[in-house]
Image 1: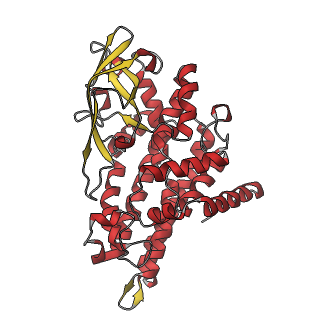
Image 2: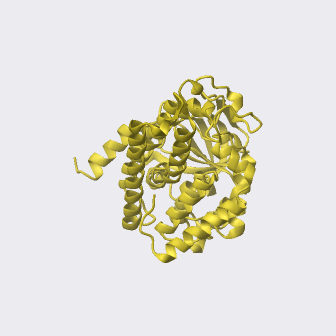
Image 3: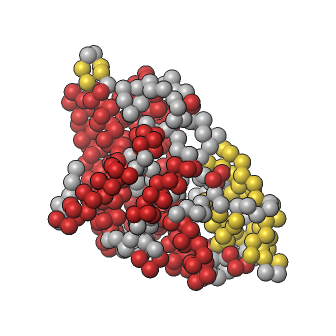
Length: 396
């Protein structure tokens, strides 16, 4: 699959491809292509390898330490790194709180926090969802009461991805309980080492706990750690979610999983023949490939039109990208067939033995399928995204 790149873009693609093949550590590549669990150090190592190359913040402007790449360069970089087997860049710092701080943060916050994001000297997590406030995020109950030059925060956050590794959390809190729901929310930056912060794992079907619940009990947060103005957190949250949803489209992930899908179909035998020889299977794979091409075109159009300020179009990208990721996982599981069912959570660790026909490991297909069911839920459910599209794009 290829677009009509200019000679400069083809040269850039070859540069990125060669770099990823040479510099990506083999043990990280193997884990990613086998769908095995990455550890904290795996992410940090890759981030720092990129930073040493000057590519640590591919979506950021140069004045904040980024590459200053245009949308096509960013897309090429993402796709080539994913296809090589690189882990995703941690979105919580680079794609979420980073852009918010660039636009709304104080100069002190920008100088202190942004450089540390690039090398993951600080690992960030997102404190948005609560047990009773997921899709209806504006109903959140976590409260922050002003006490001198500190806020005292009490509440609970849930589905907090990789909070067990995090040094900091950007957190939505209610600072004015008497204001309209959206107007009473502020955004605080909370040091996860502060007394009163506790992280408790939520076990998932694959035996891991990438998601967690975070309890905040009388946590004292300096007022200086508030982003922007009090009561304006909803504005900052919406800006952040536009960046998050664009990332959830997962174009690089789709390209990589398509390659794994094709390889799996070519290797897996049914009645003595590769499954890929079946015309109906080839048709289904081709349909997904066309969907990925359309997603790529749409992503480029949105990037060209919106630049660094994603609008409601991000909801379209989020819906289509998450659906395609689910389709890829479902077809991988169908090809794996009965081999997908005897899943052992130990498989997710790097020292597990192979059970499948190659790095596609049919033994992990079932877990991958179950894991991908969440893509149409997190970052705002598909139903919520359709509501945004209806209101803000169609005027309904």
